[in-house]
Length: 173
Image (cartoon, rainbow, N blue to C red; front, top):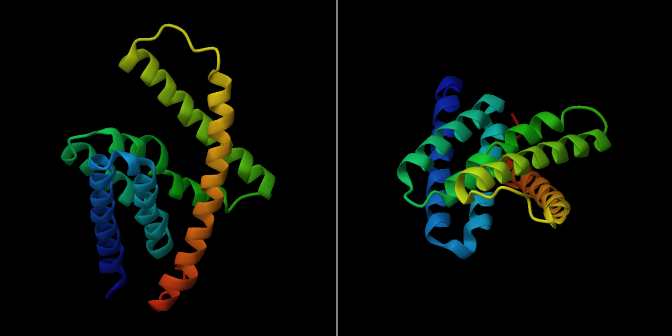
């Protein structure tokens, strides 16, 4: 397969797989977060196989298709607002600076996203006028869970690079 063809087909296949996982996440509510997290793995795989532009295209295409095609918007929204773009951003952040700075940047991104979602939910969806007294615990707990997710996601990416991609003869491009 030529390099140009590969740069188009790999993200297209990963986008289709992402939408399938988002659909399953929308019809299986107990698997919502887990299946959306798995769907974001296709974005990471696209970054590994075709670079940042491939990963970004998977995120954009699957976000648009998910929002258009999936009737229950909870899974596509979770993908769009939290987990879909994260593999691309993670790749950029982890190429820069010391480990402590990387973790600080990741936590800033997570907390900015959480704040945006909170204000969207508060103002638009629920119509709240003030924040609950325990909101700080949502941020602390969310940050802890996010750190565990990031660590696990790194392990899954390592597995993909060293077992799946290398087994297919591609290595990390």
